[in-house]
Length: 281
Image (cartoon, rainbow, N blue to C red; front, side):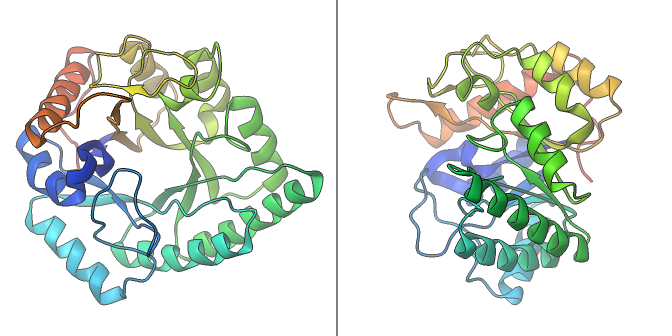
């Protein structure tokens, strides 16, 4: 397993701060976001790459990351609901950029259907995305988000319908609580484990629809020892991407507070027996 980080963990300071500060706490892998051009980010950061970026701009960003002592282990190419043909086209553009970044894994949405017709389109579009990803040597990992990948049962139903080797799961240890009332994290993970190719490691207080994602070990709902054991038992060797998204209503954290949370998260994983010595791909 490779310890990585999704730069939204640095809020408005974004990937620039992540690249500078993560190596200081022993994190040398990055889940690099490729954002939607012209669409303001929820976290208010300035993106390094968008779907409008050129291949040369990708090269420059990857070089910047490498110069900081980091590597790109995956790209986050979330674009919207894949039921929408425009989102599919945007996703295909981002896959080309992700290939240029040298990754074999991307994280993005699995879609949400409201009707049977939309469900059929969702399956068809995921197959199309899977074909495009496979041609580039990439596995497309669907986020633990509402709709087709909201919980293990929905994930399994969708994966079986799509039936594509390049479509897999990004399992999020915090979102499984946020989007599902009374979720059992370990049961959900066990049900879907064979399909998991990427992990967002996140803490939470466990309350349904409560945006409470503090430093790992400060939320209380996630048993990080048990999660590690489940992943190890399954032979999982992919990225473990830190995602610390903060708490709704709190004062805007300083850069120092973001870094404290990241350091605390790494320290907590170590205290839970996670082997973080070899944290780069």
